[in-house]
Length: 342
Image 1 (tube, one colour):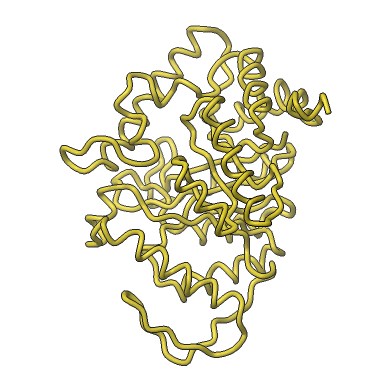
Image 2 (cartoon, rainbow, N blue to C red; image 1 turned 60 degrees about the vertical axis):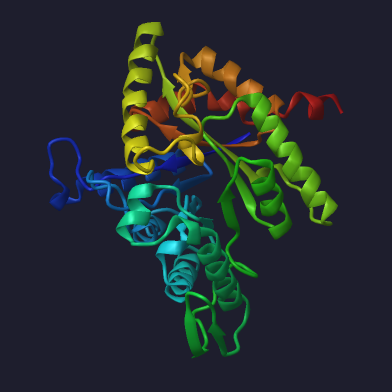
């Protein structure tokens, strides 16, 4: 198994206000430490209008991280295409890919937070169409060096050549988050890599990886287990009391996310909203517990076919060090039970 990070950042840090930007510098230091400990990647969210100084300029922070790292892959999780001019976004992504030496993983999505659709004055019903059109423009921008024009429903461009070209060919790999069978099949057909959410059970992870693998193979595409990343929240606890206190903190944090994501009076939804109405549903399969408990849970994920885990670490560098010391070595060269038997 390999491990990466699924991260966020805030401009403020401790008692220091957002104007200092100390939280962003702390995030950079955290990721530099992760690279030294052998983590493969760091995926960074994009969010707007939260009121708690959450990261909004994702590619700018990833560029800063590119300048301080050498091997860590730099992922967006995810850039919400309906919010962005696709030509400007393609230019910025290509620049990051070049400066980083081809280390950019381009996570893209449609958006799910009510507060963001409202803030950008974009109808949620337009999300699919805006995503598809932006993806079409960006893919063409990445793969052609000839001038082209585009006249779509949302964007018009005349006689443009998008530069510079990215380092990776044909373009940085696209990653999408998906959970339903339909969305997973769609991701496989399009050749996207897949991010599976924080909250699904090992059994659900097994089923979803199987759907993705089968659909890729049906389309004549090669399947690599590293094309699927499974996100998980992490806290290495000292004992049961420490674990329960951490879970309570995580539940409060998740509720804050749900409150800005859900439309007034809305039920259900994608991503975290699909689990929020079940008591404890957003914490049930988190990697919260002692090192022994976490190793057991990771073993179940490994046996479900998960080879690549993205960790949202609660507790900073100290937690990162504990995981790297007490958990990572057990899985460094491990394989799913079925593979080992073969």
